[in-house]
Length: 127
Image 1 (cartoon, rainbow, N blue to C red):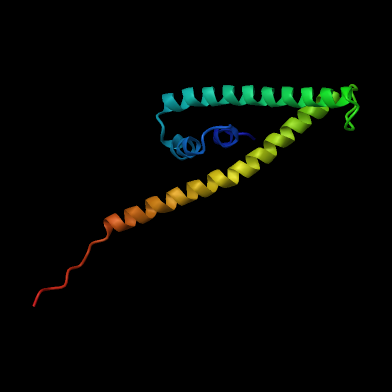
Image 2: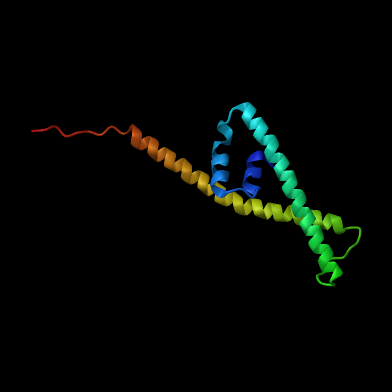
């Protein structure tokens, strides 16, 4: 099942912004999170429809030029939907790894910073 955090990974956003959004999403106030969730889902639907339209147009162009193996039959639209979903899944898998690695790196940096901040430096007694 697609989640809002998956959508953050998929959408073509600036990578730095995407990582900040992904890492901070769970800490947002509920009303802000709800509004942002609505906006992200609307953006995803728009992105999906644009990608589907691109795939349909490319397939029609190839068919008109007699190139490719695409047949314009009753299954054409279903094939384009599947192609679009496959592209989005591959995109999510690829970007998910990058975002997850960045999230892990940021989490480790925070842990190290907290450990360093909590360390008490022991001074040697002066003789």
